[in-house]
Length: 350
Image (cartoon, rainbow, N blue to C red; front, side):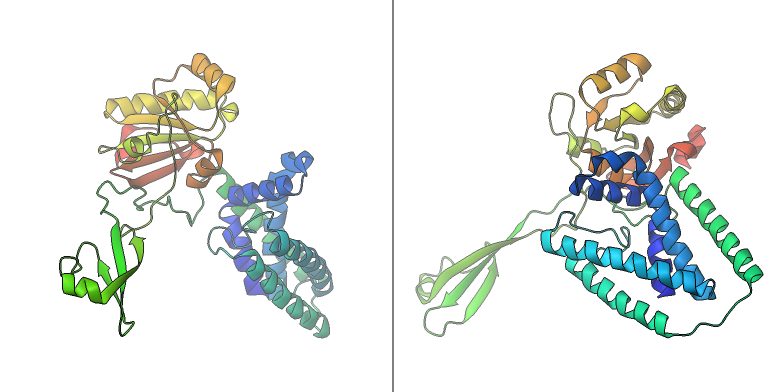
């Protein structure tokens, strides 16, 4: 039980913004828009609670308190996941972040199993520990986890479970053509054979009389890549041109330009200047449109082209606003959170 809670808290803790976004999804699905400003605080509270409960169980600290909180927590989440399984308001509960994706029914069954373990915890008679030992260990646990969460909220996750992690190819410029398979059945024996088109004996009239066409299916031989769609300000899809850019380029990603102030804009200008020295193109990709985008352009006058994409997709590819990605030929070479933006050209290229 302790190991599971520690694992769940850890994979959420390395990506607290991901948990924050998932809680926002739940609040919107349950028509609790009024609570959206508290979603980041709720994410911190949930992660800290899971990590703390796992640690307290493992170290046998405050056993009565731990069992009561655990029972209340599991009772609440069992009801929520049962509702999710029935009505699917949110497709993925985010129980294990992006490290392990479960369906809503799988999540519910997992919680039923944990409920059984909670019952065993109440049956078990834990050894008593001194108040001083409990206080010292519990304080140390809270401080460590608090620092862990604040690090990951200000920097990129320590472990990137997403498809845009460093080294991944998110765009394939040399895609193989789709393969078409044809299935034929023998009229007499009802034996079936499958052929990769056009490699089947369609010119053999005798064979064609003995076999009849059944079905066709297509197979994409290319490994899966990302599904990010990027548009220019006129609405043209430029995903292939940006993601498949042959030279090194920097994607400055901001799902909301409202969150970029004078200080951040100044840091971005310095970044653009550094990139120009190395002849590296910088593209700003945002979900902000209309007056927000126009006012941002006029106010800061950043020397770079602007492009548009879905805000959920932008939150997924980099957990920072703004965030920075170095691409070349569709491969993610580097990523930076705003706090770690390169301060010299060497930091971009090394």
